[in-house]
Image (cartoon, rainbow, N blue to C red; front, side):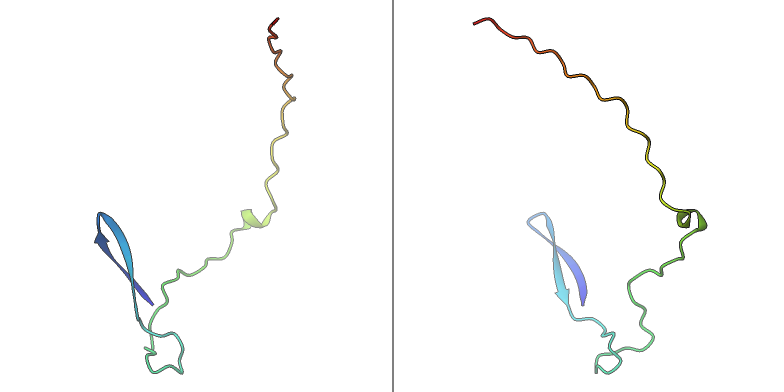
Length: 71
């Protein structure tokens, strides 16, 4: 599928159309066509070290005193 856009009433609207097929058994298949997805790079060693510990939460705040009215 190929998505193009056109502007209607000031808003871009998608227009769906047929595109090259990625199935090698399909009649519309085009060999050598690259997928639109970027290649995934391997994670760095820093991300494999484990999760980053979160900071300890501070002391809980004391509730504010409310002013009561004498009615």
